Image (cartoon, rainbow, N blue to C red; front, side, top):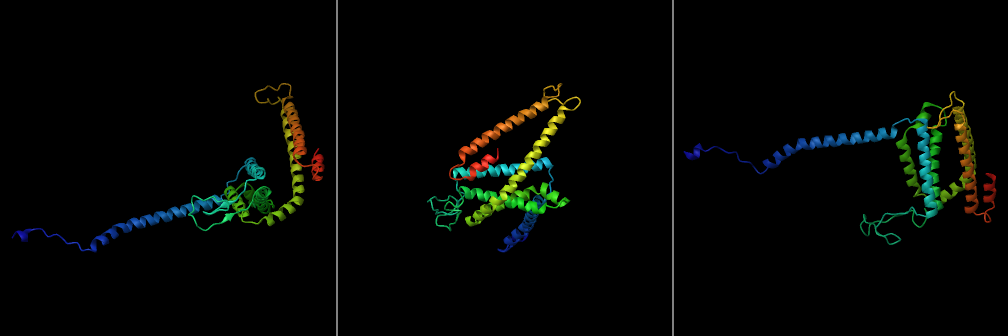
Length: 278
């Protein structure tokens, strides 16, 4: 009677536990897969929007941004030129100089990028110059015609410009020096035209700054110079004269430095080019 009155307990087979676990884990895996797909789609959309975002900047901000790119590239070129720092990258455990990489196993496949001094000194400068020339040549072709698209290209797509410049710079490390030897030969004929354009830009900027400073003195009443009163109307003209004296001093100092640092006897072109600037 006691055996008949005892409650009946279901017996679990050996395959029932894995089946129940799979039933519990199936919704979790589906939710995880859906979240991963959503995160990947959001990341791809964000990258696309970042690269294709116009993000129009003001003309002043655009000029500052381009000037910052040129300044950073110039400083990097000067450092690589005079320190003769090589751009070689050893991706192996066995390099030519005997150094071992800490993140590659010993005996792995080796590749020395830009090895043997191919990317030091002037060759590094040529690579930086070529990267900038390629970027601004593309921008010139895309913005040569006056249109809304040209304005968008000139003042937008900042992330795409930086990524493109970085990609070109990395690509130059795989390029042989013969390409940059031809580039340097062609650049010496194109550079005078670029210098002439810079001279015209500087002259135009000088006249523009002069007119603006003089106009501030000729206002009624004259505009004060910072916290200084300008009752006589000559404060801005005095600032203009001070700027002229500073620029002439810098010009003479720079000319003397060029006479000192650039060879005169071995290259007759150097003294003639420096003297013509005076």
